[in-house]
Amino acid sequence: MTPVAAAKRFTAETPIGRKRRARKMARVLTETHPDAHCELDFTNPLELAVATILSAQTTDVRVNQVTPALFKQYQTAADYAAADRTALETLLKPTGFFRAKTDSLIKLGQALIEKHGGVLPATLAELVALPGIGRKTANVILGNAFGVPGITVDTHFRRLTNRFGWVAEEDPVKIEFLVAELIEKRDWTMLSHRIIFHGRRVCHARKPACGACTLAPMCPSYGTGPTEAAAAAKLLKGPRARELAVAAGVDPELVPAAAVAAPDVP
Ligand code: SF4
Image (cartoon, rainbow, N blue to C red; front, top):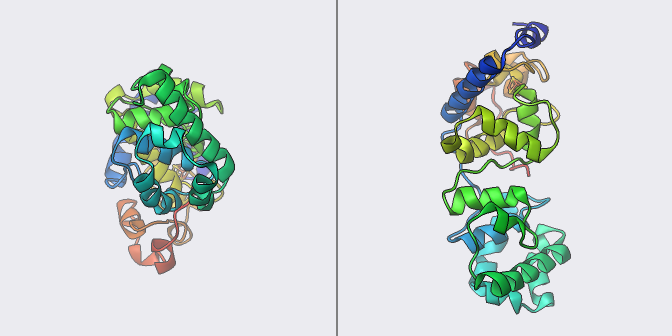
């Protein structure tokens, strides 16, 4: 199928047709990324909140390098509330924007002590009222630390849901509500991880690997990146790059070793 034909196929799609296609794509993503998960290391909701705040403008890998020492020294909201600013800044420096992040963590600790007895609340409304926690961070916390389904609209989710033709929208909150209409609630948290994995490993911002993508037959944006297998296979990234090629019907030998070892993108 040519890219033009791919785009044309979906121009007359009905809302019910879109919902069916979205759910089918979600199922294919489940098979494509069986390893999808929250890539931030944490053992309790407070740690996840802290790690998510630190993940702004950096990679999860970088955050995971910093948090072991951080979580050893700062175990409670009170520890953050009473933190020595300079000492905390030094620990957070490798994550970038460390002054703002230090400020957020100290204020978060103080607000948790003042309003919630030092315990992280488990509702969206209470979480977004806390310093440093926006809707995206709140949904990450709800979905991954409290088991409450949440849709995490980050840069990958925004780009991919637009490319999928699920939404034609840039506003993260509107995207969240539109996708919530398409996908069953119980699948929201894992769908978010799978779309983020697909964005990091296959459907890149600049050059998506369309010719090595399991979603190609259902994607109106097929052709945004190279459709030829050899060119597309070179664009796959991550430890499962060769498995991703196989899943898309592409010869895994076309995936260069460097792609498998490629560093994580934010
Ligand atoms: S890589 Fe191409 S075919 Fe796959 S989801 Fe992205 S735009 Fe669509």
